[in-house]
Length: 382
Image (cartoon, rainbow, N blue to C red; front, side, top):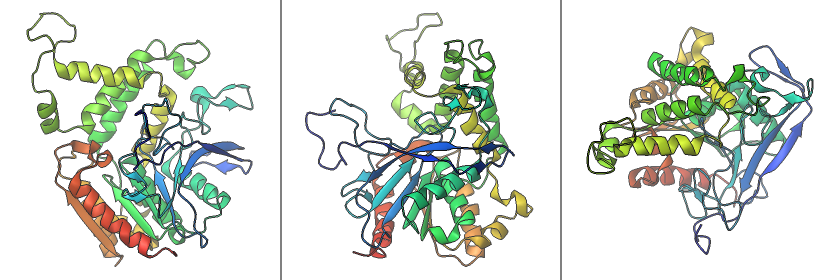
């Protein structure tokens, strides 16, 4: 953290928690009798309460979108580059809300939480949750916050899937739906990547069938492999070649199994920083939610039919080098929206950063995103 907070940062922030006693019936058939959601807010809700923005997070994201928790904190929120005063999601104009999803490991009720029926952590007994479950819980938080309609619901990757579900399940609760680097369902290849990651975790001897909390262990080996695999899929071949190529750490080959190439060092660093900050049971839950997401399944895989329920204006963004959530997946969403004569804007951003591009402050991305947010702001009461 610099000695002074950057002028374009939201600054020091803190989280809040809402406790819900209203039971939540989940898609899996189980019921959460009570639960908590942790969230953060930035900016001010205007008098008409019509300038609220909900940002839905991706797999390893959290409610902490922007700002810092203390002057000693060296890591800002995960979307610091886009959320803040004068930025794309301008906290001088909008009241911005970030929520940690159910099943998460950053304060909302999840596997690490105490199960009131056993007085022990839920662990693997925490029910599997779906995108629909998340959106239902977020809708209840919306009511608690006194927001009748979001000016926009925004999300990238798994967050973009939540935006689609919002538009389908609660069409009158949002005016704009901004879907970034997402898809209406995963491809078989994507499901396969998730399964390899889950198997790495579940076969780690320290996993203990998900009860590792009680054994005071962490399935570090499995988590590290899962994170390295996931990170590989978020990057493009071009950006990896640009960043690392075949560069050696010590300038020569050692003929052993240590870290020799710079790309090996990078992946291991990413894995090491992930262990201890993200829960293995949560990783399993999040990847399952990704796999299960398919809102058109109930309509014979007809995405156009299920999007008949939507009424929001849409902005869909994809990135040319994103091979995990390719532009073709966004084209499918755009077509289905056009089939329903909805207002749709689409931008395909030239980028060699792969899937991770949606997290970055790329000039073309910032330009088109800012222009659309100007439109969103113009519809809010001053």
